[in-house]
Image (cartoon, rainbow, N blue to C red; front, side, top):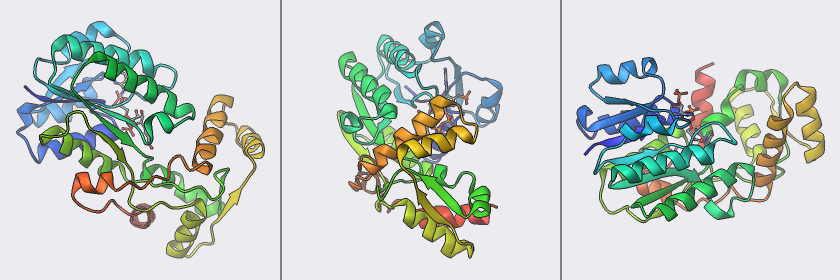
Length: 286
Ligand SMILES: NC(=O)c1ccc[n+]([C@@H]2O[C@H](COP(=O)([O-])OP(=O)(O)OC[C@H]3O[C@@H](n4cnc5c(N)ncnc54)[C@H](OP(=O)(O)O)[C@@H]3O)[C@@H](O)[C@H]2O)c1
C-alpha cells in the first residue's frame, strides 16, 4: 500500500509530496505523472514514479495498487476534466484502492459557476463509484492573486468585477498540508471538508494592503461585467479566458468563495496563511 498523488509534478502536487516526505518513508509514496523527466527529482529522492495520463485510460491501469490511498488532484484543462477524472476514478476502483481524496471546489454543489461544474460532476462520479473517499473542497489559492504583482505596481490598479465580494483564500501550501493530513491520518473517510482561509478579504482590501506594504498607491477598479469583458478582450485575451475571468469575479461578487468555515485551519492544526503574509512574500520575491 502506498500513498499516491496524481498531478505530483504540479504546483500543489509538489507541495503535497514534500509534506508527505516529512511524514512517511519515500518508498511508500507514489507520484502519478505524465512526464517522467519532470519527476526525475522525485525518483532521485526514492519516491515511486508511475507514468499515466488522465487522457489515456490505458495508462492509468498501472497507476494504482490495491489498498493505496490516492489523492486525485483535479486536472488543469477546462472542458476535459470530467472524462479525465472519470478515467482516474475507474482505474482507482478497478485497482481496489482504500481511499480516494479529491481536490474539489469550495461549496461543492453551491459553486454554480463555470469552474464549479467539473468539480460537481466529479463529486458525483466519485459518489457513484462507491469508493471510500474524502472531498477536499478547496477555495482559491492566495498565491494566484499575486501573480503579475510587478505589473500591478506599475499600473497602480487592480481591475475586476468582483465588487465588494470576499475571497477566503489560502495558500497552496495550506491546502497541501490539509491533503497530507487526510492521507496520513485515520478518520477522514466519508468526510467533506470546506477548505478556505480563516479570513476573507475584498479586492479593495488586497489593493490597500499592497499599497501599504509597497509604498506604491494601488487601487481596486471595479467594472461592470460587460466592461471588464471588453477590457480583457482589448488586452488580447482569448474570448473563453475573458468569459472565465468575468465569471469567476461574478461568483466572488455573489459570495460563493467567501465561506471561512475554519475547516482548513482545524485540519492543518494551525491558522491559515493570511493574505497579508502572502503579499509580503510576493513583494520580497520581486
Ligand atoms: N483553487 C484554486 O485557486 C485553483 C487555481 C488553479 C487551479 N486549480 C485546480 O487545482 C489543480 C492543482 O493546481 P496546481 O496549481 O497544482 O496546477 P498545476 O501546477 O497546473 O498542476 C496541474 C497538475 O496536473 C497534471 N495534469 C494535467 N493534465 C494532466 C493529464 N492529462 N494527465 C496527467 N496529469 C495531468 C499536470 O501535469 P504536468 O506537471 O505534466 O503539467 C500538473 O502536475 C489544478 O489542476 C486545477 O484543477 C485550483
